[in-house]
Length: 287
Image 1 (cartoon, rainbow, N blue to C red):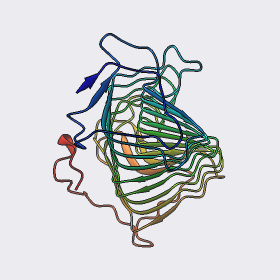
Image 2: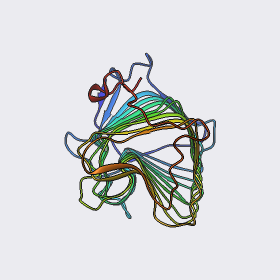
Image 3: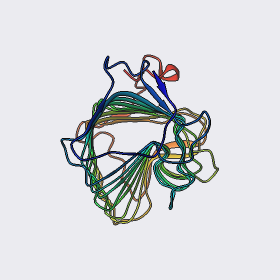
C-alpha cells in the first residue's frame, strides 16, 4: 500500500521489506500532507539491517538540523539497501536522496530519480570516511550546486555496473563531485546526458579537487551537448586520477573532454574517444 510517514528510526538488525518485492506496490510517501523529516534515519545499524522492495517518495529534511538526507540519513551504519526506488526527495543541506556520515552501506538495484540538494549530492552525499558499495544502481536527473548525482567528501565509494544520467548541476560535477582525499573506484560505469548549466563551469561528468585519486575502469563519459566545460576536470595538481579502457566523448560547442591538470589519456591504456552510441539515453537507457 501507500504509507504517509517520515521520521522512521531504523533499529539495528531490523529488515524493512515489502511482501512482494515490487517497489510500485509499497510506497512510503512523505508528501501528502508534507512531513518535513527524513523518511528513514539510522544510527549504528550494521550489515544485518536491511531495506528492500520499497519506494521512498517526497521526503524532505527541512525540520532536521542540519537538514541532510531527504529519504535516508545514516550515521555509523552499514545496512543493505536493495531494490529501492527513491524519487522527489530533497534536503535543506546535503544528500537530496541519501546522506552518509561515517557509513558504508551496500546498495544494489537502487534507483534515485529527481532528487535535489541545495549544496552537494542531489542523489547521494558521502562524508567523513563513508565508503559505500554500489552495484547496478541508476541515478536520474538529480540536482545540486555540486555533485548533481553524487558528492564525496573524504570518502571512497565503489561503483560497479552503474549508470548516471544528467541533472541540473549549477557548475561542478553533474555526475560526480570529489574533494578532500576522496578515492573512489568506478568499474563498468556510464555517464550520459551530463551538463553543467553555468558558463565557466567544469566537470560535466566528474569534478575533482584537493588530493583525490579516483580509478576509472571501463567507464564511459558523455554529455548532452547543452552544458559548459570539460567532461572530466581536476582543479589542481594534487589529484591523480587513473583511466583504463575508458571512453570520453564530448559534444556541443562549449564542451571538451578533459581539463584542468588532467593530461588527456586518449590513445593510451585502452582509452578512446568515440560516440558511445547509447541505445536511448533520453529515456534512461545507457546500454
